[in-house]
Amino acid sequence: MSDERIWTVVLGRAVRERAVQAAAEARVAGCCGHSGAIYVSAAAPSAGTWCVDCGHHPLGDLLLTPWCLLCDGIARPGITQARAGALEILLRTCDHCLTTDTPAP
Image 1 (cartoon, rainbow, N blue to C red):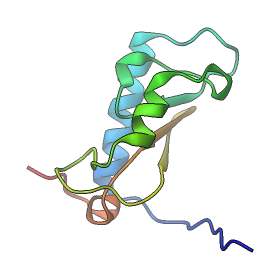
Image 2 (image 1 turned 135 degrees about the horizontal axis):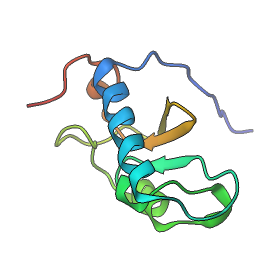
Image 3 (image 1 turned 90 degrees about the vertical axis):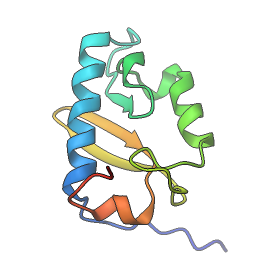
Image 4 (image 1 turned 90 degrees about the horizontal axis):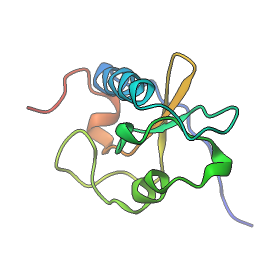
């Protein structure tokens, strides 16, 4: 039996601000055209909003990247979700950036 758990983490201000920025960029870029397109990859917000059914490549890129999107560190396992309005922003961060209130210089 596998030990699969979901952890609730209070996201730091740096992650929340990045999510709002990515959501704004995605809204300008448009969407995949499917109804209910509510997801954005913070790695590629210019790809617009997209749905789970779309299989849009930014999600694959996000899953494969080993790097934190906020600094040069190695990302923690898994994807972090941050809500920005009606959009779910998917991003990878390191443990430090996940909860910090100040973005890396």
